[in-house]
Amino acid sequence: MTTIDLHNDQLRLAVDPQAGAGILAFHGCIGDRWLPLMPDTREPGCDLAAASFLMIPYSNRIADGTFTFEGQHYQLDNTAAHAIHGDARKRPWRIVEQSPTHLRCVFTSTEHDNVNWPWPFEAQAVYELRDDALHMEVTLTNRGDTAMPGGFGWHPYFSRSLKQEGEPVTLEFPLEGAYPDANDTRIPSGPLAPLKPHQDFAREREFTPVNFLDTCCYGFSGGHIAWPDSGVRLRFEPAANCRHLVLYNPEGKPYFAVEPVLNANDGVNLLGRGEPTAGTTVLQPGETLKSDCVLRMTIVRTP
Image 1 (spheres, helix red, strand yellow):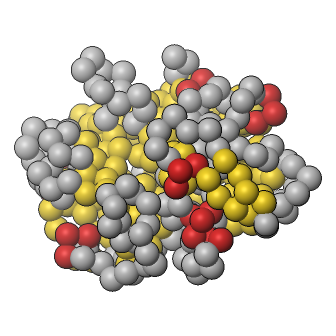
Image 2 (cartoon, rainbow, N blue to C red; image 1 turned 120 degrees about the vertical axis):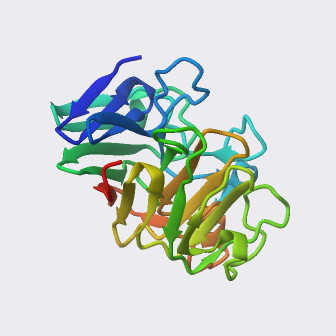
Image 3 (cartoon, rainbow, N blue to C red; image 1 turned 135 degrees about the vertical axis):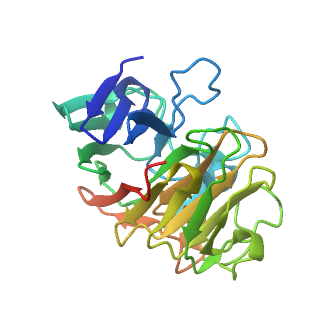
């Protein structure tokens, strides 16, 4: 583990460039205490490898690891039922810029063996602390000679409790719809559909640990997580092209995930079927896809 620590008066961020440029911990200063907005994966007993990881050159899953693009069939190597979360999150990235509040890392697929993607690509990830906000930026560049489909996303986990075990956490994320998952595989079984009540967080409500949820939604334009008893709110401010949000609520765990992503689950196959909300982008040789998301901490009150 190689830890790069970024810090200012309000936020602390730990990143491991050798493990996909993933986040190891993210703390906010509330009153006179540093509280874990994301689980601190360096702590004994934490069962997460990363507090947040990057999914690139696609986010979430590709059904059976197979797709057709511009008339050619592709089969990815699968270690699970479906290809999942891209192929850069466990590989080393190079540091190219670093300061106490800023880190830029680069991943070039041709520098690694057996990258599970048919096209060569380059990715850059930027983390920057600015006052009360963590700015996250990612770029994906097609380094091949032919067009390639691409997308990416962030997979941050958040602490269910900040100060006391059992404290409530609430979500407010207005969304337009969700992809049905009739086969319980996280692969869309149909086009975008209206939100079901348990998927609807247009009005702020509690996100309890007893109701499992793992769903990909569309229409993301911002929202927040709040820990009312701790007096903390974390606001999401995504770029305009970051239109999907995956909500993951594992039962009985001290964390949950709220994942801003560009493409839908199985986006490359949705693209092939002409789904307008697929979110997968066709990148010509040398073309770059860029997006960002800001996590802004607000102290609602000092407990």
